[in-house]
Amino acid sequence: MRRFTVKHGASCLLLLLLGLACTFAATAADKLVIAHRGASGYLPEHTLAAKALAYGMGAHYIEQDIVLTKDDVPVVLHDIYLDAVTDVKDRFPDRARGDGRFYALDFTLAEIRQLRVNERIDLETGARVYPQRFAGAKAPFRVPTLAEEIELILGLNRAAGKEVGIYPEIKKPAWHRRQGRDISKVVLQVLSRYGYRDKNSAIYLQCFDAGELKRIRRELGSQLRLVQLLIDPRYKDPDNQTDFQHLLSAAGLREVAAYADGIGPWLPQVVSGVDASGKPIITDLVKRAQALRLVVHPYTFRADQLPQQVASFEQLLGIFFDSAGVDGVFTDFPDRAVAFLQR
Image (cartoon, rainbow, N blue to C red; front, top):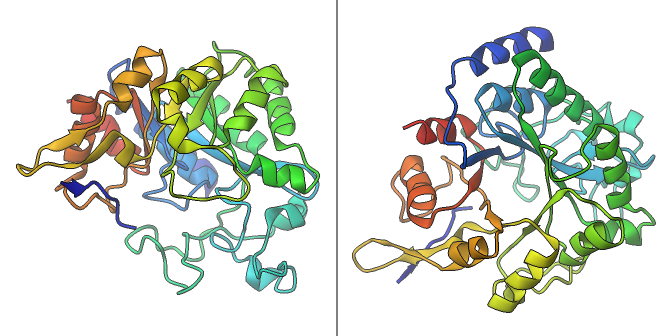
């Protein structure tokens, strides 16, 4: 068996993207396209431009990774660090911690607003992680707040007569608590202020930390739809004590179903490889999860980072949607996933 592995002028823009939204027909009602960090295959991740483009491309949900600033403002940023996606080293060269990294939590919102967002770079080599993506080095992209992004999506919903949902992820909650911050409580307050309060709201709230999701449900009393993210059990994070191997077991999934409404597995946890004839080997994870009424939204589908045994992005989508039967996908290329579902 071969393992299934993955290789490692705003107003004018919004008008254009709203026009694009009208070109897409409705996709299958029970299958979701989740724009991973927005339309990040085309524009720098987590910028408002990338989110507006994802909206125009017909995504059903748009993802927000959330960390806190020094003044406790939730901002949309994939990491607790700023250095891989902004020019923070140039603007604030003396603000790194002892490990050489620049942490969002060490900067006020006013300071973060001074940064320019760029395509993600490899900090060791300085090279772009995805060299074929957006190349405009001087475009005025900024780090948005969670509130700003919600305002954008709700505003587009009103203008377009649609209901595109949000899919926020709480990043590193245990790490934030060690820094004296309760990120989950802050995020839930912002979400509630915008009307995201229960399972009827167009939102999924996700996290890798199982203990934090249980706390959000039981201690903080959230009635939102929660999604337990899963990762390769060999990956070790000192700030997350979740036993992912256990969560993949029958008993573990039953535990997840007691506090969450879905799972977000890593691609190889759904399709583990191909057999001698080249046929995908589909695990029983999706069937077991769906039997417990858990939705399954695997990550991340990238047209420029295909598993070695897959010839095209559309083939990859077919394996997961048609053969494995997943309920939705996280993708950097929402337009292509929407087009696939419109077949």
